[in-house]
Amino acid sequence: MSCSRRTLLVATSAAAVGHLGAAWAQVQPWPQRPLRLLVGFPPGSSPDVMARTLAEPLAQALGQPVVVENRPGAAGNVAADAVARARDGHTFGLMINGNLTIAKLLNPATPYDPATDLTPVTLLATAPLVLVADTRLPADATRLLAAGRSAGDTWNYGSPGVGTVAHIGMEMVKDATGWRAVHVPFTGNPQVIQAMIRGDVQVALLPPGLALAQVQAGKLQTLGVTSAARSTLAPNVPALAELGVRGVELEIWNAVAGPASSPRAHVQRLATALAEIVRRPAVRQQLFAQGWQAVGTAPEGLAHRMRADTERMRAIIERAGIHAQ
Image 1 (tube, rainbow, N blue to C red):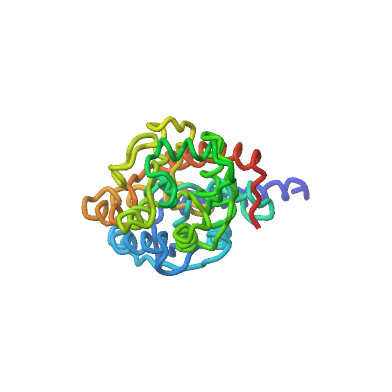
Image 2: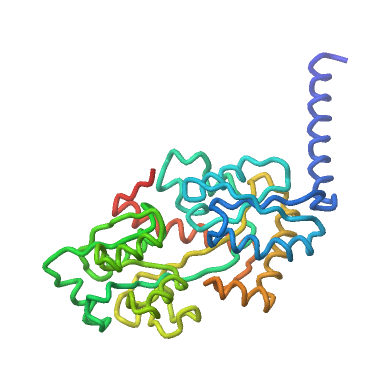
């Protein structure tokens, strides 16, 4: 047998073995050992609380323990990168929308690309943001919106960091209202709230749970929510569109994703289990109490949301020149 023919046979055999191995992985029972669910934020954070809410029922559904592992850093991108690099077949991540959409747009040095290095599993839950204002400003939302357009002094607005959805959302608000407002970034939403109470910043976008607690305490006032219509999370707060502020339809969301190398069958099984779990009445109520509306999608649903949100926020990021470190 010639050398070239022998080489061809070896290569063909190796390819066949590779295809058989991939096919075998698809039909093997999965998971075969505990699942790791990485969270890019510290214990007690909103993504961490959601992950721990889902871990036990997910373990029961899959027949294997689910270990929540906190890997905080870089607004969740440290954990997202670890998920992208995982090759054990049992590592996934519970991520915020920024990790799955605009991470690379905000910082080209981000070591992973959400579009190519991660595979969507399911969109777990969503929430609008609430536009809140200093109580020293006019109490009527229409008057307050007008004051922002005609104010002689430039307002300040706070966010929990450069490139966060709250930051990008406030740039959308500026475009829609004509406000002259300067971004003041903080290390988190508690710091934004304290700055508003002091009067250092006048407006901000906050998650419903945080916003409404401060409003009920008389420390802040609401203008509207960034959802297309009123949200069940804040039923007494009008959508901004009701006030004539259009083009600010924006949500925060949590989702599960895995490495791009994840077998399709494994992704589908995990997505089906998680979607069923978040739709259970008891779990749905738990998530609602945490400030979230349960969703639960197929992988294709999350993939569509990732693409749509990436393109929508790309325009604002480029126009406003937003760059995260």
